[in-house]
Image: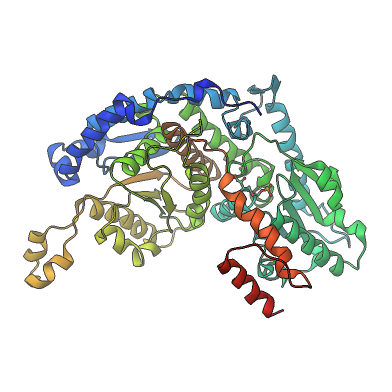
Length: 549
Ligand code: G6Q
C-alpha cells in the first residue's frame, strides 16, 4: 500500500485561526447561561432552527452565540470540509489506512446517477443487486419460495455481527409498523450459544430461512453460528444436504467462501469493499429489512438516505443539518470537556437506534491518531448512548439534570404517532419539550424557595440548567424518514472526523482482542495442559476455566 499523500498532512488543529479563536471564545460563552442568552434574544428559539428534507432541527438550546456559529463554520472551512465531502462523493480513497473508497452514498444513488470507482460506474451494479433482492423478497413474502419440504417460509433469521447485525436489528425494530406480520424475524449475533439456541427454540426448520450476513464470510462469530444453524436445519430436515439451498442465503463480498460453506452462489447477494460494515444497512446487508417491509418501502428508505446525502453535499454549512450537528459535537467535546453524547428518541420503535449509533459513531471516531499517523492533539469521538424516552427519564436523567457532568442531548420526536391511543402521543411529546426546557433553564433557588421549600432542602431541589440539547423533529416515522435520520448521523460523524483529521472509516481497534481470542480458544479447549505465555492474571483465568472441564 502506498503511503498517504501529502494532502493528508493537515496543519495542526490547534494552530488554525478558527480553533484559537474558539478557545478564547469558549471562555466567554462559559460565563453566560442559556437563560441569559434567551433573555437577551427573544427570537432565539425561532432563529436557531434549520429544516431540510422533512427534518427540523432546533439548536437554540445549545451553549452557542452567533459568534460561536461563525467560528465553527470558519473551522469547517479551514479544515476543508467542503473538499473532503466532495472527495467522498467522488469515490476518492478517503479510507486511507485501508486504501478504500467510502461510498455508502452510492448504495442509495438513484438509477442514472453515475459514481466512479477506478473508472467504473458502480451505480448500475447497486441497482442490479437491489433488483435481485426485490425479486427474492417478493418470492419469500408471497410464499412462492418454498422450503425443502414444500412449506412456505415463516421465520427469517439473520446471522451476522457488528455492521452486519446492528443496522438490520435497528431497522427491523424501527420499521416494524410496516412489516409483514405473518413473518417472524430474529437476529443472531453473539458467539454465546445462548443467542442461537434461544432464537430457534420454538421454530421448525422446514419453515425457517437463514440469511448469513458477512462481508468477509470469515468472521468467527458469524461462521460459528452459521455452522450451528446448518447443523440445526439439517437435523430438522432429515439430514439431506440439498436442503441448504432452500434454507440458506448469503450476503457477502466473498463468493469463494460462500460456495465453500455450501450456499449456492445464485442465492448470494453481493456488495463491495467500498461499503464499510457500519455503513452497510442499506446494501444487501439490509435484506432482512427488505423481507420485513417489502421492496417498495425499502426503496423509500433509500430515497430518504439519498435526500439527506444531497442536502449534506450541497446545502450551505450554516443550514446543513449534519454539519451543524457535527460541529456542535466538536464544540462540546473539545471546549466543554463533554465526554458523552446522549441520543434520546421519543419513539418506541427507535429503541435500538442509540445502540446502532454507538457502533456508527464510536467505531468511526474512536481514534487517537490523525490520518498522517500523529497523535491527535484534542479529544475525539465522545461516548454515544441513550434509551427511548420516557423510560430514560425514570432512570439516568437524574444525572443529566443534576449531576456534575455536561451531557449534550439529542431529543428525537415525531409530530404524529403511528399508534394513536387517546392522548398518549401528546403526553409523550410534552415530555420531550419539558425535558429540553428543564435542562436548559433549570429552576433557581428563588423559585424553589417561593414554593415553600424549607431552606435545608433548597440546594437539593435546585436545577442549575444550562445543559444543552438539540431537538430533532419529523412528521412521522416512515422508512424514508429513517433513512434521513441515519444519514444525518452518518454525515455528522464524517464532519467530526474531518475536523479531527482522523480516519472515520477504519476500525483497527477491534483487531488485537480478536487475535488474542483465537490463541486463547486453543488454550481453553486443548486436551493437554497448554504452554502459555500470558501475564499472570490471564494465565490464572485460563486455568480457572480449564479446571471446570
Ligand atoms: C464495521 C466493522 C464490523 C463488521 C463486523 C462483521 O464497520 O467492519 O463491525 O461489520 O466485524 O464483519 P463481516 O460482515 O465481515 O462478518
